[in-house]
Structures are given as C-alpha cells and as structure tokens.
Image 1 (tube, rainbow, N blue to C red):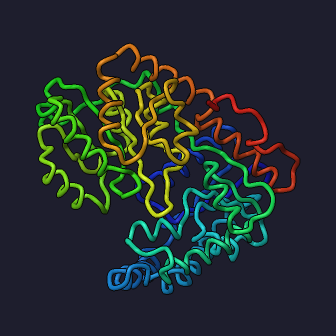
Image 2: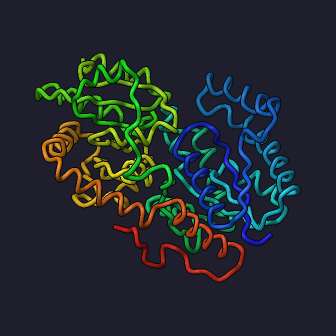
Length: 407
C-alpha cells in the first residue's frame, strides 16, 4: 500500500475545488502514486436522489434548512462508497476536500489517517451564498461541523495563510501547513495556441482588446465590480471587449446589473465554457481579471483561475485580498488593486492595454513563477511530503522550507 491515497470530494461540478482534485490526482499519478477517487458520482442515482432531493426542497423553503437531512444521509452513503473502494484498492490514507466529507471518511476509512484540505470557510460561504446572517442557526450548524473536522482530522492542510489562521481559530493545535493551489502545466502554458471563438462572439469583439474574466458567477468572485468597471470604460470612451466566461447562481442578478449599467457595447456573458476551451480563451486575452470581493468573511484563496492565466503568460489584474496576494506579486507577476473599486480596476486594465511591453513582461514573469512553484508536479510532491507526515513518516512541512515559486 506504499505511496497511495484515496481522494474524496463531494463535488463533481465545475469549480476551483474540483479542479484542484483533478490536478492533484494527475500530479500524484505522474510521480508514481496511486490515487483512486470517490466523489458524488460514486453514489448510485438512487442514493444521490435520496440525499439531494429532500435537501433541495428544504433549502428552497429555508436556506440552509436542508442540511439536517443531507448530512446524515449523504454521510452514510459516502462512507459505504469509501469502504467499498478501499476494499478494492487499499490505500495508506484518505484525503478529503470538505468538512462535509470528513465525517464520512472517519466512518469509512477503517482507522486510516485522514488528511483534510481546507479550500474555504464552509459556514461563512453558506452565509454568503444564501444571504444569511453569520449567527443564523444553519450557519452555526455548519460551524459546528467545521469544528469537528478541524479538530478531528489527523492532518489539516490549507491552500493559503488566511485559511490556515481560520482553522487555528477553532482551536486546532500544531501545524496547519500551507500548500497553495497549482495548475496542470501540460494544459496551461505560454505555448498554448489561441482557441477558436464562436463567429458571433468574434464579430462582436471585432479586433478590440479582449479583457477576459474566467470565473463562476458567485458573490465572492466580484463580477459585479467588473460590470461596473465596464461602465467606467464606456464613460472614458474605451471600447474594449470584456468577456465573462462562466456561469453560476448570480447570473440573472449580474445580467440585470449589466442592463442597468447599459454595458452591452463592451460587456458580454458567455455562460459556461468547456474546461478544454479555457486555455485557448486565456491565450487570446490581452488582460485577465480576477476581481474577487470579500463577502461575509469569505475571501478568495490562491485562485486557480489566476494561476491558469499566469501559467499561460497573460497579465493578470486581481484584487489584493486573501490568497491572491500570495501568488500575484504586484508589478512583477501581475497587478493588484483594492477590491470593489471599479475605477481602480479600470485604471489597471487601461494601463496594461496602453503598454503592451509591460503587459508581456508581467505575463512572462508570471509564467515562470507558475512553472517553478505551482505546477501539478510540484503540488503533488508537496502533498506527498504532507502525506508522509500524516502517515508517521519523517518529512519537513512545505511551509517550513523555501519555495522556488514563492514571490
């Protein structure tokens, strides 16, 4: 069972966390590890329906009200899936990506060490997504689940320093090592050819500079600020093409804001774009925006979207919050601006569009930064070192040694 780990996540939809799991799995397998996966798709159709159906109905009536049903039911099903997978493919330890799946892993891991990666604060994220107060009973229920996982897991890893401090705020003793996110540099690199653009979108862009926002439409991703930035560009007489590549629960709200701001001449929502097409879109962009916004204590981690753009050698303009400040060195590998300030965002974009040489230099430095320290292979090696610690083998935690990619 040497060099083997069972990866567990409840996510199968497109998103940063799922991307992290897929990239980690690819990296681990490339360095010789076995890394089988249990996810929501590992359950039968009937199990998913029994778990998620009542949850969605209850949540529709009362945001967060479906968790008392979902947690015990899904935990039982996922624990069974974990036990069955381990019986077929025994591994040294189990690595979960959510406090939600921690309980299932504890029940199904057969005493194996459990590693937990924190990608974001679950209770505040519910408050953000459902517009609930931070002391709402549903939010408090998830906070209790977080405490159970952070204190009970054998090893906890964070994707950035603010989230490591969040874990410690629950009373976690000892190290919470930080392993920033990483990207599959086989797919994201400066030599990716620009991808094809649908004819109607190409006609709309019509040779204008392309400002790309490859983000899901959720409040913390700050797309509302980008919409208001598009209005600023119009008011300044700039006819750039601002393209939002992504979908999500905030889409109707954001499209309404765009209509209110009358941004149609410069702003377009593409909806969901296949993951395979994202590298080509990034390579076409003159600037990539990651305009994240702090919402109810939720801040962007080491954004995979930002790292993907950097890996492709494109200049990134990002908000100076959370884990973004750990991967974007202002003026060296990108540009940082205060969050929620459309005019400052527009200033940064216009400065890069006006100075292609500087934009190219930032993009080149960013690509080297990612290749050196944030590739799927480097991420897998860092996780392998933490797995060794979790399993009782001697290893130095990643955040106690120098990182070749750290800015």
